[in-house]
Length: 116
Length: 110
Image (cartoon, rainbow over all chains, first blue to last red; front, side):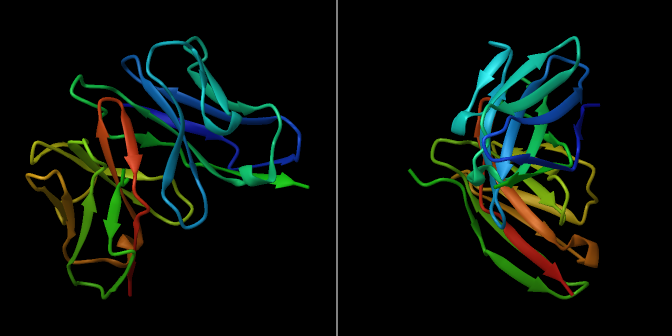
């Protein structure tokens, strides 16, 4: 069964500092991996996805993530944090059955706090 | 191009009642998935519909059921509501490997 672990329910960084949100997964087959962001009282917005192409994936708003099979990790980074990055971030995994994306398994989320 | 839409936005029901939530997928998307997000938690997969049939199901009881219509829109039905069913219910539509989420329906069971 697939699963996702997000280390750190809350991460606080200063504005302009590096953002690093950690995600480890387990999957019995090569996974598809995603990072989503959720702002208060809103749905989820896709930041980026890994679907077995390049291991370094670039997303929206300056975020990127690197797929490391040996470490079963898919950590999210951003070189310089902005106040607008404050939100809840979710890592998710799925196994593509060939006909489309299967149901996603999400981590518990990491609340990113940006200090001025 | 309209994204995924859900209705209603908010809903308050009493324990034991039944509820129906609705979802219209993004244009061109033929697959709809439903998720339950309890307060402070990540979304949990309920089920997925493709070609009007339930294709995959998460670990949810039979009180949770759904339907997909020929135009790909979908409904989520929950019977015999429990207090623990209070959550944000998210619909996501997809084609191939990417799911797009709607804003959700906030269900409160009292």
